[in-house]
Image 1 (spheres, helix red, strand yellow):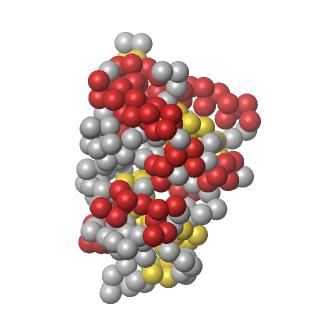
Image 2: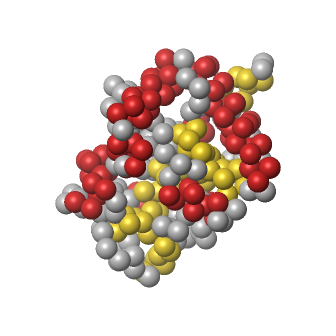
Length: 237
């Protein structure tokens, strides 16, 4: 396996270049498609609407590669992190050459708490991959309400609303842990009543993927794509 990160290969991360950000994304096989669970809090609507098969992901060779990456994570953690480390080094160098901010999404189509996964590189033990790259900004979407990255300055999480986690989403944003992303079927509103207590301002998150640039305390509005356009579960608002 030559590499794990995909760098600026989809429309939204390419748009992020316009914001001065070069993004590398790790795409694994979501849910239990690999036989191993990587999205333990995913709802039925989320899994059905997953962008796993969108764009290049529709090709069987790409899907097989993502399954192989997922299996590598579980079967040979040392090799997995050696490749990931090398990929991030290359991303950081390219970003520096191009005058861009290097950024990494470790969970493009998964929800693994990488902040808890330690690894060893060249005899040095790191608490997580973020610690090894303090000049790189890491960010992800998550549905795991118990994730906590407040002590990691270069990692930010945006909670993803589904049809079954409304209370977790309210606690997340009201508690100041981060923003909440919502997928809308049609128009992205200016305000959204996540609870009866108050409306939250909504920003348009479709212009780029660099969620760490978003203001705090907002809902990030996304547009339904692919299978999500046909969602009837309530995952898409």
